[in-house]
Length: 302
Image 1 (cartoon, rainbow, N blue to C red):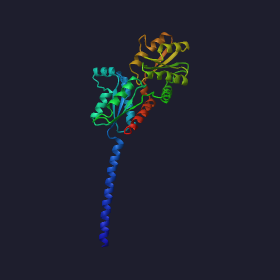
Image 2 (tube, rainbow, N blue to C red):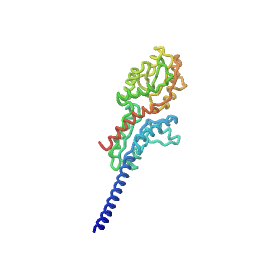
Image 3 (tube, rainbow, N blue to C red):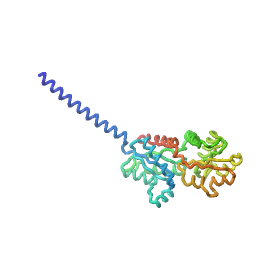
Image 4 (cartoon, rainbow, N blue to C red):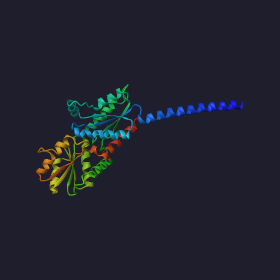
């Protein structure tokens, strides 16, 4: 009887051990899958877009940083600028609007999307993205939720953080007596108020730093006159834009008479363009990713 009891005990112990191993294995696989690929969740990176090939290379770095922060998550792109999408289409390159990209994600079975704005200010393009997200969220048999991450300069702390990063990356050859001129896009939207606020922060951090816009305020003509009045002999021209696209290469650094570089030359002021968009600085991309993290964390909680 003793031998029989021991035999039975060993048999039951083996069964229990095997069951425990199987349960652990299944649990690990399920947990590991969830950690790598959150079910039905995706990220949509939304940029104004650019048709300049060199500038578009920056997007690959942003995507790489996004995937490193959110491993295993599906990451897709959309451009808000219709003119950019049309120009790229004529060149045989397919790009999607936010609405098209969200529709594709829904068709592919995703139900929750965190859309991250890669715009600089919360202006017209950002408003359009929010409207699109609201239209798609909660559609029958479609996306259940679409959250939107704030653009780069969404708050005073964001502005100061970005200003410090941009000044930290100024070329070492620049002397304190030389001007730093940041080119913003500008807009008729009320969000243009971000630019004068950024100009004040820049000035606080470096007295010879200026900010002007292409289509808003601060106005370039006034900034140019101030640089001239100070007797500054050289200015470094830097884009305050996601990528060094058409505005940076033509309006800022171009050879035409009306470019900022040419106008400074006509005023007897040397200039040195820095053709690097803000998205080329990892510390700036980190601000966008922090905003994306906030949008991601809201999925399933609203």
